[in-house]
Image (cartoon, rainbow, N blue to C red; front, side):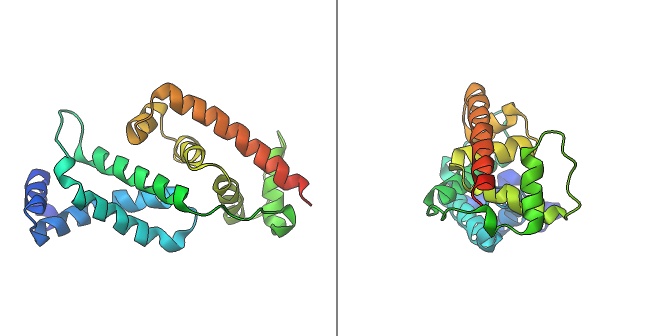
Length: 195
């Protein structure tokens, strides 16, 4: 089955019957979506393929649970499964050791300073350092808080989209985002003061 011949209903039925070609077509079609979700939720890139594979294992083991509903595409079900798998992986990770400001490079320290000061000019350091500082801070948050910040602020998803992806109510998404931002500021201040 090539990409041109991809028919979701036919692939789902074939995968339920255990046909390898149908399963392969599903994986090929859904892989970009799954790997994008995994990459956006996993701070360490080394395990992204393993986590994507876990998403597909869950997908095929739970395929009988999927029921087509009017107006809700199959991809939403897959996205929700991927997000929950990422949350489970983040919960399973051991607590990281405390990070100190002295562990940061000069560029990372400059970005941390920029994040804490209102109206400060962005450092001339590369954006990789900024991403590393953000990932470091997000990794210290509880999984749900880190997820809501990633989805809302980094991926710029709406509250409604996050609600659909996670299964949380919209008011819960807003409350978690508020609390997560407050925790993030507190972590940044603590990191900055740990010279």
